[in-house]
Image (cartoon, rainbow, N blue to C red; front, top):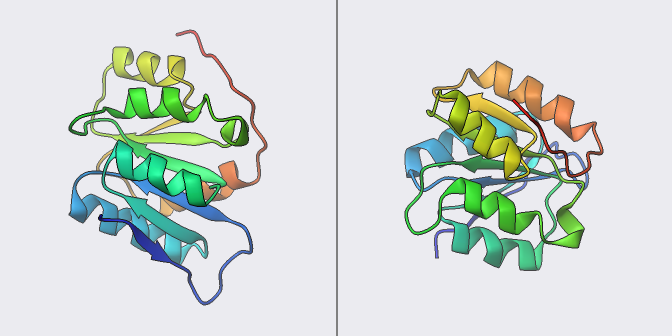
Length: 143
């Protein structure tokens, strides 16, 4: 199982970020950005690994890739939103998909934000800080 857990020295108590991406290099970049921002990082390489993790821990924020084998990020997001513990957890899509349709699908699945790859680390960290300060509900967007 390719789950990674990392707690930075200056961790922000209870500020757990779950990153889901099937590309190891992308997951490593996400981990570096999250950890450098002071958050606890848990990584999963697939939707299945993601669900295994959320049985053990409750993230404060989820960073989710769209293109993954077996189950895409849209489906993972929909399923995460059925978990009552996660209804107020921001879900941010990290993807190279730049179409309006992809954004529409992500928001309809229950996502809260859409960050394009390749991402700027400082901008990702800024979005992390912003969303960590929010308590969101299941928001449905219309584009």
